[in-house]
Image 1 (cartoon, rainbow, N blue to C red):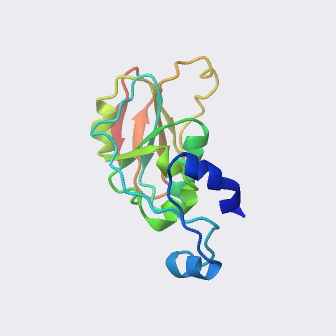
Image 2 (cartoon, helix red, strand yellow):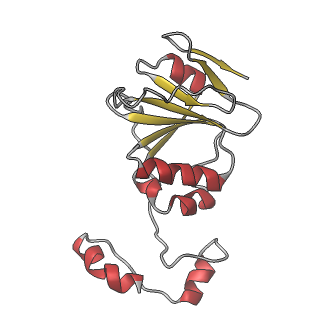
Length: 174
């Protein structure tokens, strides 16, 4: 059904496709209940350095669950966030469960792996955080600039904290 609906668009864009049976799909998919579509794509490395000026950047610390990471990528895509900076201990982007849970958003959102304390120390734009033990600073932010970095803390044992009380963030890891 999907292929019949999308064949003209795929042909127009010059995207090759092959129809296979449901049984063939089960054999080549790593999932126990594969979706209707399987794409074979080349892994792409994003540009050397993320461009953080004039756009929102999502910063993730220690996301270990592949399904959660993929869902976060999908949500970022939905909100128009086109880049994510992840800590070096975040699950790998091309993990099959991450890819499945992005539902294709991994093709539209760039992900870089970097040392978060080093990255955040060099930030020249506002940094906002969503931390498990943080305080609500969202009120009044709707009129802020459309650039900045959002930090989401993992539910694990390590997190990067930012002291929001001062103009230049004080960054520490626990």
